[in-house]
Image (cartoon, rainbow, N blue to C red):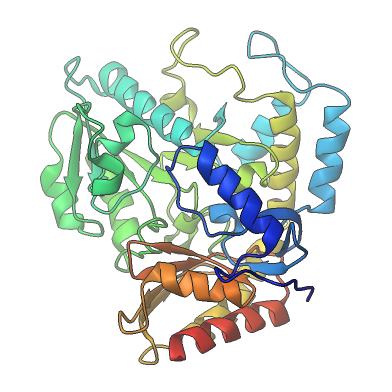
Amino acid sequence: MTTTARTATGTAPRSAELFQRAEARTAHNYKPLPVVVEHAEGAWMTDVDGTRYLDLLAGYSALNFGHGHPGLLRVAHEQLDKLTLTSRAFVHDRFADFCAALGDLCGKELVLPMNTGAEAVETAIKVMRKWGYEVKGVTPGQANIIVASGNFHGRTTTIVGFSDDPDARDGFGPFAPGFTMVPYGDLAAVEAAIDENTVGVLMEPIQGEGGVVLPPDGFWKGLRELTARENVLMAADEIQAGLGRTGRTFASDHEDVVPDLYVLGKALGAGIVPVSAVVADRDVLGVLRPGQHGSTFGGNALACAVGHEVVTMLATGEYQARATELGALLRERLEALVGHGVHAVRVRGLWAGVDIDPAVGTGREVCEALMARGVLAKDTHGSTIRLAPPLVIDADDLAWGLDQLAEVVKG
């Protein structure tokens, strides 16, 4: 591992300079660790001073296939030389294949491509409302969608309006009506909240930003049965949880659930270009007509080329199997830390939430200590850190990264 001399703050000279320049000229809507990355390959990132770091975040699961995956880069480079954007005013040659492949992966008839995860969530909200008025017969203007406490679906004003995270919500109102919050994982609460104006339930099968929070066993299947019985759409926000992360193509697959709408993003663009989508059958997505929803960049040629390659890679099952195999190592090593600087862990595939003992420090402090040891991770909600290594990580590298975590929390 290449290293360089560091300043008293732990950041090497050029990194410190560039970090300070960035902080001086950007809005402080993030509080990044003081590392300035210049190059990355696989599960490793190298900063501007030549120090290497093991990436245990993978861009919040956007980099499921690692940094610089050669097959994905080849497709992107080839497409860059041909065509990048037409807008949806015209059809390009990569569009049909991408939509068909993604629809087949999901077992659904139609695909609506967008760019970011938040855009996909907003799209799902609009579609569920439109379906409610045109198909279910809800009184115009009265549609309601049930959401969960602890949710994270993005940061638009509509979405933060149904968040219970004060950092996301406070100071950004007034908010749009039409949402009812219930405790996450409480099926009886969902059932009690459904009325004649309920058009959908929007939830994450696993709450990523919340700290990789898993619902009780059977909840997701029960939610599918309840929504089907009550003629309410079920929208699964698989933006972080989906596309191989949990050891299945979708986190919903763990309970053999097929929602009415898949809401996808992050790994669909492989960390190369923003790609998101809502995928559903014709009786749901078919409620949209020309002029009612759109995106200049959604479904662009470069995005479709990259997204199609992602779907092709997932269709082999190789990455899902790898997440399952490495996830067993992740679980074993993390569970051994419970009672030794760690209060609790939650693991599904190659994804984990680790609750740090306050006596050890905050989640941020643990991440700073890991950075000093050459490992990059991310804290959330004060005392929790999230681990989401690229699915291509080498088992020995993963074990080494977990060794560093053990050294930090055990003191």
